[in-house]
Image (tube, rainbow, N blue to C red):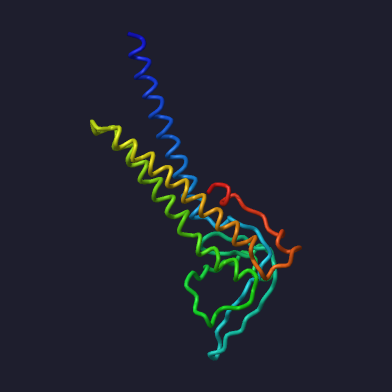
Length: 188
């Protein structure tokens, strides 16, 4: 009799651990995608002010932190100011700025962490749905496929993100190492 109860207990513990793990993974990945502390690096903060149909730019190389959506200045005249990353820039806006190269390369990898969050959510829904259906094995198998796919998507995104910074052709060898990853990156 105890073996039957122990098997049920094991399944209950497994479901609890799976649910907690899925929730933790989804929460951490959602926080990572939504925050802008993926990378600390030296970059150019730009100010565009339009007066009399003339755009003036002031460039200043300072420490910045950036994420998938925006980059923020940590020091200098623009401390605390953030600008959205233009994922679909016009060709006329392109400048030969090292940080521009990196920001443009990041846009290529942004879809992978987002896809990972969606796949984690779908896997969590499958785990929740498995409690209500008799054919649990197929639903749990689907959840496993979603979780593995989310992990692969996340790994691809991280590899592209790291490669974009390491492969910036405009940086000298000494400047290639002047960056560090932030807590958002590690949450991802």
